[in-house]
Image 1 (cartoon, one colour):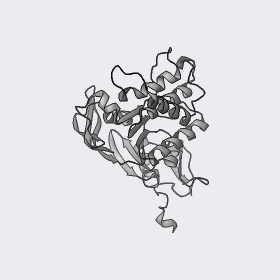
Image 2 (spheres, helix red, strand yellow):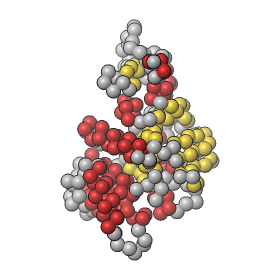
Image 3 (cartoon, one colour):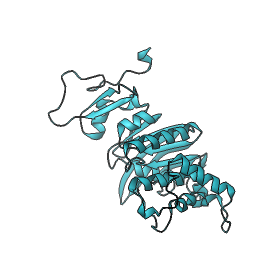
Image 4 (cartoon, helix red, strand yellow):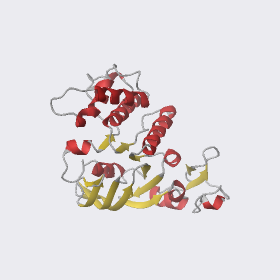
Length: 279
């Protein structure tokens, strides 16, 4: 469970988050969406304790984040960052095994449970063929999957991901978000900053739209992804329609001069019909 209450954050003398309140329960996968600079990454960093709010309160698993040790937080929150520098001498297995560090005493060696957790993480992220390869030899997408495996090995109730599909091909984009959705269904709380609105709508239970450091909307993909709301947040006209296969909202941004006199459902300021309307 994540609880964010009236959080504001200043960085470099500029307020980048303002009065944000949001709760994410276990078994939910929530996407943070919004334009660049909206505050998505900063909000994730307030949850994992890397950024301290100037006001407000953040709780994870019923305990305040403020004042907790890094080790204690690492037992509760695992983070998959958007790219990170990893020593090129480490093997992929070494990096995944780092996820077990919060569960080990200072001078203890990894035990059987640690090894099993690492193997499960490698299997679930489809990185089982990479473990002995140096991380420096891996592609950006392979490194991203190794970081996800490290987070899984950490075995925390909360999982945070910053642009987890940014370096992945379409196969692993779908595989990664499917896995995170499954992890949420198994009991974790999952929050990801995602730029691709179609992927967010397809895989996430709810969306939280950030714009200008403020929370503009929270709700189901159908509720949040309306053309009017997206134009206010992104400054671009869109057509929001229903995907013919998945049935989830799909967003098409319109360039200057583009447009339809009669668009599909969701064009203009009209949202997609709700599930109740389909009955």
